[in-house]
Length: 258
Image 1 (cartoon, rainbow, N blue to C red):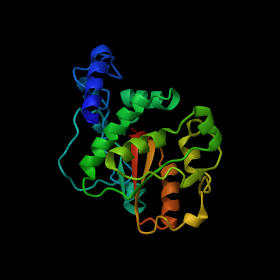
Image 2: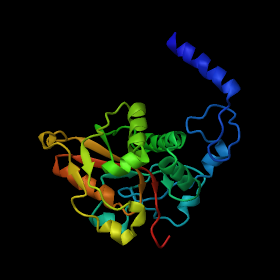
Image 3: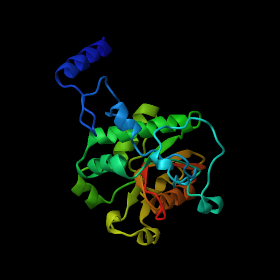
């Protein structure tokens, strides 16, 4: 009964307030979970041919493809991940440029929840394609320092993790880690990000230090640039017993030579 009422209310809402594409602002022919029309969705810069452990784009021009390849291929690894992999597996569906960067900017600086749901849905689609039978036991969103979180009003990594947790029926650990106050990541160069203080992230409650023993964990973030943030968190989670740590992120900035 409740579902029928919700469907009726949604139908009435759509008749009076039709859903518009977040990018081209044209009316959508049908309800879309990612709030994008088929043309804008296909025009997104998908991160195809990326490293399996850090998601850095490897194939020139792969970010301009208009399709998601579903065929299974051997995992690709960049030079660094051959010897020192960032994570056990990385799922990052989009290159951080063009419309993908535009959606992310609106999410981060305009508290764009529709943009957040759109990015989460795209990420969810790729997670279901790449890890259909190996979902983690727990999601850990990258924490924000206290004052930046107060100033911005929300944590975009937490928003993404909450959306993914609801859809995949997975618990989200919001308070497992804390972040030390420091300069904004946007103000730092790639070299400065790589020199991030080793104690930038800390375990909130040492009495729960065995909570991850033997578990499969996925770190959720919005944008991956150098991987320094993810590397620190992954190291901390493994020190506290995590058996496998993946990275789920919405967008990935390409390397300098690309």
